[in-house]
Length: 205
Image (cartoon, rainbow, N blue to C red; front, side, top):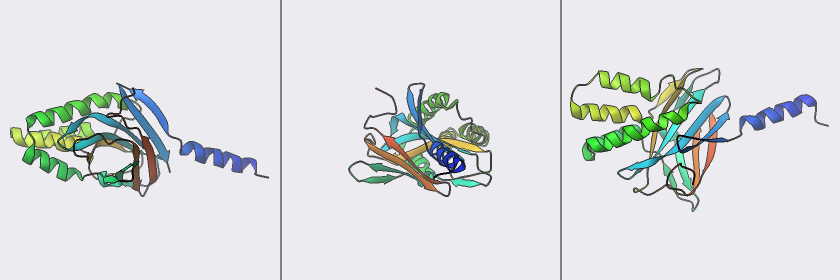
């Protein structure tokens, strides 16, 4: 017979791995906690060049540090193809080389609108902190555009206990919706899997 303590531990483990869905500001969010590290995401309703974009927030409730990188994320399509997230430096470099001010404005505006959906998680060193730091250090309009894009993109971050971050993760999808599949994050915190429908954005129908 399973002891009462065992039942409690099993229930706690199951609760710890439960995906919670909610809608905010028109976006559909999913959040999952494993090993005291919480990951939350939503698909943003815009594309920049060939990239589909998701908004990610990570909160470290564990006792030790955890490193988060955009390359930790993979989108696995239902038909079997997998797309690994593009490193932030590559996306920013492409925006500088091929983009224009309008692309950056669209990216920043969309991301800032999505921040309203993150009321359940207030990052300690996320986009807002990066934006203030980057934009304070430059004066050139072109460099400011690059800095703004850099502030939006999720970068490699070492989160100490109690810290959190957020940022945009980019998937090279030839400008098409990601489609049906699942978003997977794998790193030292564990493996996180989220189902993704075939809608063009993270909005509910």
